[in-house]
Amino acid sequence: MILCDTNILIEIYRNNPTIETITKAIEHKNIAISDVTRAELFVGARDKYELHRLNKALNKLIISPIQLNISSMSIAFLSDIVCPIK
Image (cartoon, rainbow, N blue to C red; front, side, top):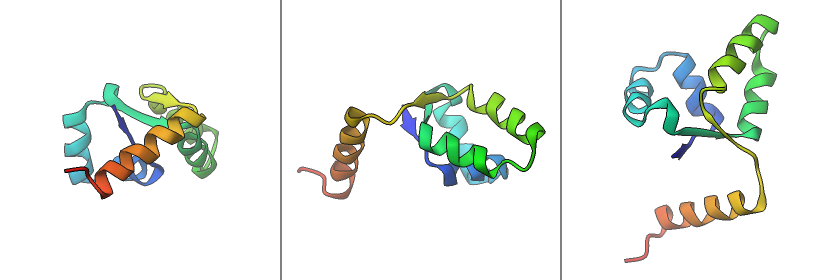
């Protein structure tokens, strides 16, 4: 599972070829977003039609509510990427 932030999803919807290639390799079923990202995208919707389309697309992804354990896991994950233990 890959947790994507708002900027990645915006690039997907802009048909950025690099991001599209990466997300196709990952497959939509393995992409997750947080409730915060979902809310940010909803705020950016221009009208009810766009909101409906967006919601339909987001429902294909894993939606992870923000909880203490998720926050702790993301910090641990980032720590491993920035300063990997060798």
